[in-house]
Image (cartoon, rainbow, N blue to C red; front, side, top):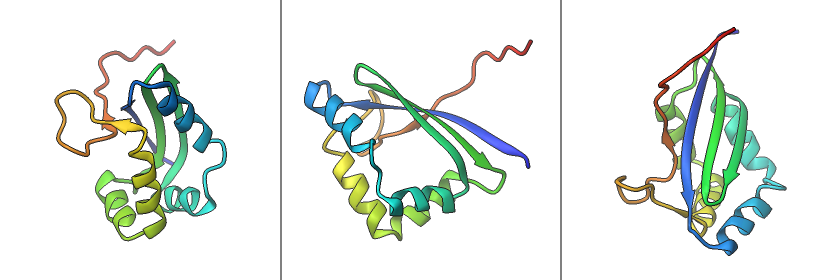
Amino acid sequence: MKTQTYILICDLKDTEEAKLGYDECHKAVAPEIIESIREAGVLQMTIYRWENRLTMILVADEEFSFEKKAKMDLANPHVQEWEKFLSNYQTNLPGTPENWRWAPMDKVFDFHA
């Protein structure tokens, strides 16, 4: 199976409450949210945090697209509720439009042994 890998970043509000709250709510993500991720074609999703900066590694099948996932998310009330809840912790990345949370990063170096 051919896969696609994306790296995205997001900033949390720069408070201890936001950092701890975000970590805590990801310890037990609702099954409906996990299922929505899977249905969009995501095979693996890992989120790392340093201070208030988040980095997501997303591995998806070849059918995955952010446009398709966005349409699916808009039609899913569980995802809409989850996203609204997470907005209590997240903030806009500098220089991005309002409500812009996760932004894809550009690959600038790739080493293979």
